[in-house]
Amino acid sequence: MLHTTWHAITVFFNHLAEVHWQWLGLAVACHLCKLLAVSRAWRNIVKASYRDRHVRWRQLFGAYVAGTGVNALIPARGGDAVKLFIAKRRVEGSTYTTLVFTVLLQTVFDMVVAGCFILWAITLGVLPGLHVLPDLPSLDYGWAFRHPRAGLILFVLLLLFGGLLLAWIVERVEDFQARAAQGFAALSDRSYYLTRVIPFQVLDWTLRITTVFFFLRAFQIPATLHNALLVQVSQSLATVFPFSPAGIGTEQALLIYIFSKTHAASKSALLSFSVGMRVTLIIVNAALGFAAILVMLKTLRFRDAIETDSGAQPEQT
Image (cartoon, rainbow, N blue to C red; front, side):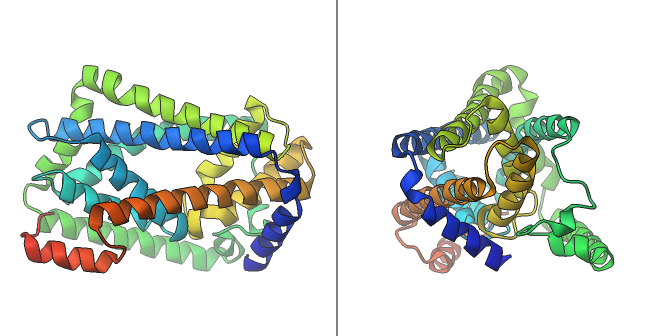
């Protein structure tokens, strides 16, 4: 996988002179607006859970982009822990349990929309079948398909570990059900959810697709709504099991396979596009995210911040 990814990066630099920088700038601007929209949706969900608290948007925006920045560089969504840690510090009296369920509520809408796009791609017949997946280069979890027995055992062990972890949390955390329900408080108020959460999540997805559209223009790939949606499908699938930073390996493999069906561009152009788009977003997310961490925690040493926080206040989960 590393060899294939390095080859793709080399191809990207070879095509660098062909990039249309004005479209790249518009793509980055749309991506930044997307971060504003999605963080606003999360802030409103958290506010519904803590109606008697002062929940500032800029504080949760900082927490959100901090987590996004860490996720850009560290696989397996390690940035989510950073996001929750900062949010708990900024929302007085909040608990990790409730904040986790606010994130889950936000994810429900994303899963529904992404699922619809994936079903659309399945009806087009552009997604690789199970017999093709093991042969896709750079696929993060291709090893599991090439060794199905070992992959199945690993999957079962992960499910078992997840179940035991959840049982341990439920037993350890006081009033777990009440705190979990508190995280879904926005959903219980339909009027609030439809007017204060859904519009920002719709805006988030609109800006995601618009961002992809401008990236297509920047790298001279036919920029159509159809192609932008296909790229979004590959991005959604790549984040299911993000074993590489930002799921770059899986996204690259899926993009090349999907667009090979449409003959929209050459393989080298697709490699340049996939790597260029992902590298650009990684740089933007990491720069913004670590700036937010530095501003909000006064340090980039996350472990030191945790030790300081645990020494200053009693543990709440």
